[in-house]
Amino acid sequence: MDALITAGGIPAPADPLYPYTHGEAKSLLPLAGKPVVQWVLDAVSACDDIDNILIVGLQPDNTLGTSNKTHYLANQGDLITNIRMGLLELSRISPQEPYALLISGDTPGITAAMLDWMIAQVKTQPHEFYYPVVERRRMEARYPGSRRTFLRFKDIEVCGGDVMALNKTLANKTMPRIQQLVSARKQPLRQAAMIGFDILLLLALRQLTLAGAVRRICPRLGVDGIAIPAPYAEMAMDIDKPYQLELLEQDFMSHSTREDHQ
Image: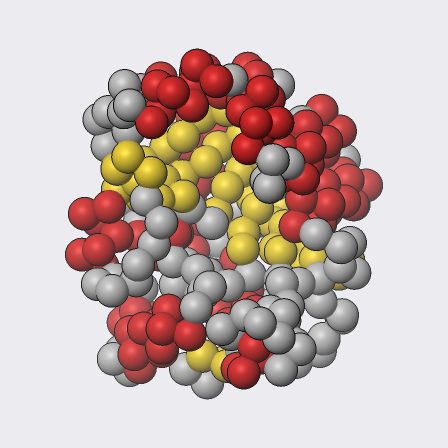
């Protein structure tokens, strides 16, 4: 399998992380002696089932180390376009491999074992899109004070993960549709028309289970997808705010080695 790492997010001056990044990508923030994205690359490099790595949003950088074939793609302007163009580039690099792991470059807590778990989901159940979610109680037990955003379903309350698996064909099949959905983020009626007013109402009333929501939403987006409760809170712990960076710094520094952290 290949790995697509999105690492080009640059906080704007009004962003709370800007005083820490000063116009640079947040994936390059220092954390426990390394850039944040290097912790991600270490996990990917230790995963035997990953061949090619494509880093989107950073310039080729000899200070970042991996043991895999590593490729770079310039920032394409926004996250969805970065993902789409990254999948297309990986299709060109390794056309024989149908899937790619999509990994956010600011999730430094992930490990090779977590990536192995994600790859195993792809091998055991055929879908085009695999989206891990982490239950609230698991997230808050592992990272008290992380203040993630949770969505409550009839059967479970979860936050979204930052390590997914996608069939590369989604670059042209589904990503344009998702781009339209994201572009309409300030137009709730337009978004509702795309997803379905009935689904939004059922979600608001908490009448849908997680699996039920997936069964209704995925066909409307044109994707065969699945949401999987993940056993690892680290897969949903990215860095959006200074307190999350500080929380992870404390978590990493409380362990003397990376092996202890894993």
